[in-house]
Image (cartoon, rainbow, N blue to C red; front, top):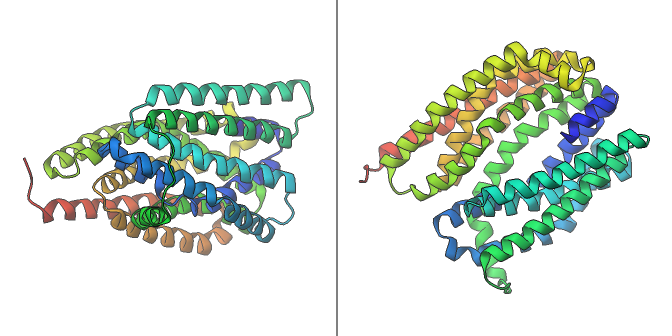
Amino acid sequence: MLFLIFARFYPVDDYGIIISSFALSNIVILFFDFGLPIYLQKTIAQDAKASTDLVYASVKIIFYSFPVYILISFISFLIIYPFFSPLLVIEIVLIIFLSNFINLFSKILFAKNKFKELFYVQNIIRFAILLCVFLETLLLDFQIEFSLGFYLIGNLILTLYLLVFVIKSLQTKYRSIPFKSVIKILKISFPLALAVLFNFLYDKIDIVLISKFTNFYETSYYSVGYGLYKSATLVFAFLLIVGLNKASNLSSNKTALKILFNKYASLLIFISIILNLILFFGGGTIISIIYTDKFAASDFVIKILSFAVLGISLNNLTGVILNGIGDFKGNMYVTLIGLVINVLLNLIFIPQYGIAAAAVITLITEYFIFFGGYYLLNKHWREAPAQA
């Protein structure tokens, strides 16, 4: 919703600058995810009692990565976008770092089935942020630095609240974690970290490439269409959060796991077809209503991306099942190949065909990753006998 306000109140090219800034920061933070959020959710879902040290170690790892993250972020902006406002960069870099903590704490609470509590607090704080930004636009001259300041404060409050909530849910006091234990955790989560990195890189890098090879107008048009496409996937996102818990619990029972996959796949196919039709025939109207007619050029982007909804829903499902059974390396290799294909095709075709090429390449990437993940799951089911 915050980006919707930015899109409505800012010129198209300025919105492209904001989107590009967040895309670059999100790419940098991927290197400091370490695979810990998903690893924690899987581990806690399997054995909540054995997770205390793991949680404290994970928080410690991300906290101590902060100076390196800040350094790499500023170097990246100086190289790629040297003309961006320093204050804008600082605010966005800090917002994204806090989002990394929020993601970690959210996955811990998801594993403990604290869905309702998390939903309420996140939405209350987000509503407060939106209200502050709305009042600013109504009463003051609209300044992006002020709006991002509200966003930053909101993320800080949410981070601190979730930290306290997580500590209370552990029901144990903090204790120092040996360095050897931290290294051991990172070794286990490393393949998962790479899978997360590769998966989200292909999701974010096209915005940066578009901004460098075309202009910020094209970046804005693509990001609006892509944003609507990604928003549509939230319809089934919560299904997959619960699915990881279930897959982790059923990881040793291949018959039950296959039934789970088929059940989720059938539901996702049904939902995806409906979303595909809505986005293809009504996406342009939705964009005009929500973002205004100045983003009418995004219509053809959402028409192309509407056919990728089925691909992303199923590749997310295969990724969830692979993570649930602990096949982090397999998931990593599939997403790595998908990333390489995505980047190479974007480098070749975006300079000539612009955002149309980026949309088609996203479509190709989503289905490639699904078929790769499905191949690994079939191989897994064939190799071991079914268990009662």
